[in-house]
Image (cartoon, rainbow, N blue to C red; front, side, top):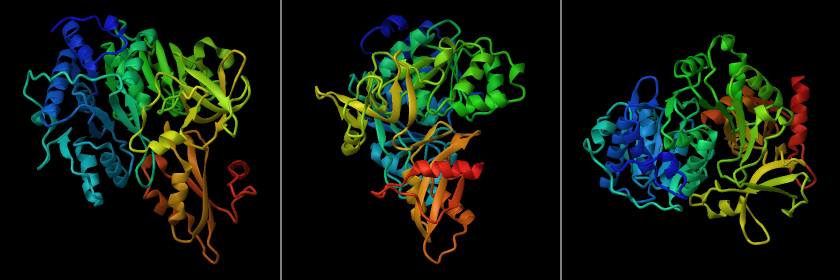
Length: 523
């Protein structure tokens, strides 16, 4: 195997992740690549097992660009399945563990996958639900089943090497599924060029430096995690994977592994700041702390900067791409109310309600474009078009779904979300999905859902319902019945009965008034 310099290789306009993984096995065979607390693998071991998985996928008939579904807890074996799919030339399709069995079946069917890497608990949940599952070859990531082999028994023999899949920049790298309660959630397709760009810029953020260790506490099915994970792998760092976030365990791992990088969502930072023993741990090795996925208050940013070593970098974007904004919070204490400036060649403008371009500095809906834009939604071209904006030259921009303003220094301040999306614990929740679920319940004449502030989750869904004439609603039973059909991250935290929903003259629900009502009631 030819020895290559990963940093120089990443300077190329495009490359294959397999080359980097194999290079790390040659250059630093004994360095730990993956550690999940129960298992740990060196780079030599990681490269060997990824190649065995990739070779067997190809032997099973996996064609270039074909999806490989993955469902389970974040572990080393999950990471191996993910990387194996990429190295084989396939398209990784990590499925959201908090989704309902019906949602999961729809995602797997929509992806077109022929393989499902799954753990025992999630497989049992699927089977026990009675939903109609697509025909998939199940490969177990934890324990072999009666009719499904264990990953290590299934993969190709030791020393196996996959054929070069000849992947190109436009070939799909992964499909990330959005939330949804019924039908098929939108599958967001990222190209290999998009992920390559994320890998290649990693060196500017301290990746590739000796001793680089990334601590992950968000799941690998989340784009939040993947952006940092692919950079860690590309530069040959160490990825420490947590199955579930816990403040004390996170602090112990950060200290034990001398972590240099981490990605946390705002509610995790809040919980760490509130943790009684936080200041007893040595976090001095941190150089870069990232945050994304949810509103991050200026007050919390200031506290994190004051109490945690290393730089604090907020990333504002969306899974679909569009503009990418970076706020180096530690370097701009006077801009903590913002989400930073357009970065890495990104462009951002604002448009009015008629989607007409606004002059610089005027508040409006944000639209952006960058090298990290999605290729489109899987099997839903009409949804791709709905999320697009075209400029005078016919170039496509991504509608961000947020209302914002760009100041004279180029810093962007978010004023609100145009689609009223709720972000709870770093996960997107679409109120319409919850409203439809409420409307399916007997006795409900009308319903609306808004996001309200939550110290634990950042935001949480609050529902308002109108009863049908003559019906007395049991709100506790109604909430239980509705939540039973929702994913774990989508569930309503509270329901309130209201005589009539406030609406505009054209029938639009006035959610601003509902938010005011929620605040008045809370007070």
